[in-house]
Image 1 (cartoon, helix red, strand yellow):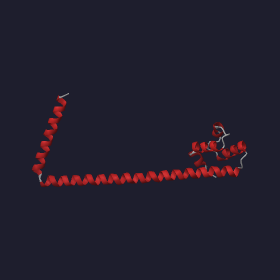
Image 2 (spheres, one colour):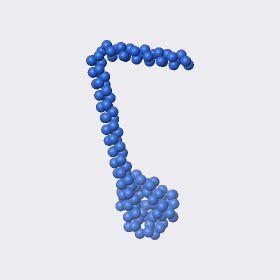
Image 3 (tube, helix red, strand yellow):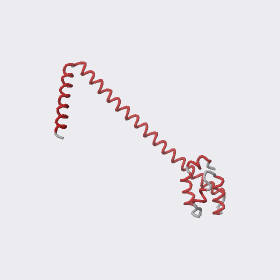
Image 4 (cartoon, helix red, strand yellow):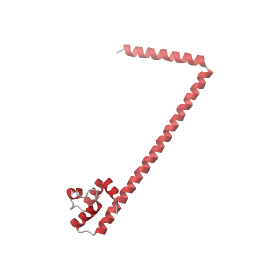
Length: 135
């Protein structure tokens, strides 16, 4: 039989499946059984006349299906997380390689690097000044 944690954790899904199979059960009737598997089986049995073992078999199949779906979703999230981590590592490696290459260039040509940086600053300042002036 499905355990209490399974019943409590997936109550809304289970309630929907029970209502679909045994439509004569009301939401109020099912809510009285919330979290209690024995009460749920007894209520279904009294209301529908269905055999206890058939009810338990149906509920167990639903709980197993829910557990399988949960496991599949968990595996998919885990795989997606691993892909994100791999992608972040690749981006980090690429950025580090760019920083290393830039450091080597600056060390090899310090004067040219300084002049380029100064010129880029002037161009950026002039562009910003023109944009702010036009407003």
